[in-house]
Length: 224
View 1 (cartoon, helix red, strand yellow):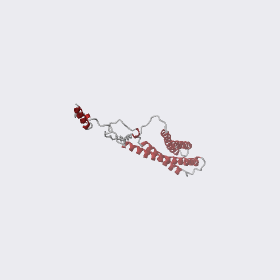
View 2 (cartoon, one colour):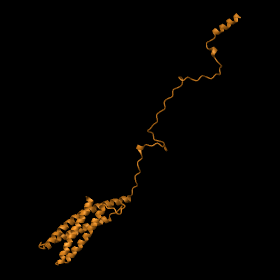
View 3 (tube, one colour):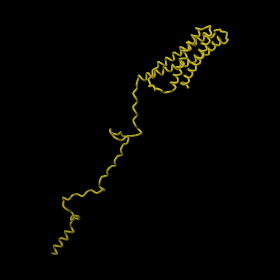
């Protein structure tokens, strides 16, 4: 018995270390430790400059798309350009008419004084006055036709009182005055040598000043 115990003690002392702790061969392997696990790379930051996919609800208030330009109308633009050109010529002729009418009134006054107010009836102002009358009438008619024939591409507002309306009213009064002057001038010439001539010539003179005043108002409301 003592021999058997000695044999077991020798076997225990001569056995390799860890042999007693070995378990069955089909045991599951132990999971790897946290230190042995591979490190993952950090996620990349999103690219904010990349274009948004179609249908995205994201938008930028500071980078809004520009509004679509209105469609051009070549016919409308042509009428506007034609009206602008005709009205510029109308203004030039209107100023020339005003200057010519002012000269006509001054020369007409000199002719009236020469014939009816002791000027000696020399007749030296008759031809200049007649030339100025024809010039003023021609310029006035040309300026009026340009204004009437100019196209009107814009919609008119009925009952609106503005500078254009005041100009038209003043020119209407001036038109009536120009017609009355021609009629009174011819009537005065037909009554030459009679008392009726002086009365007609005086009325012709007053109407001439009234016509010049109406033209002055019509020009002033546009230029000033």
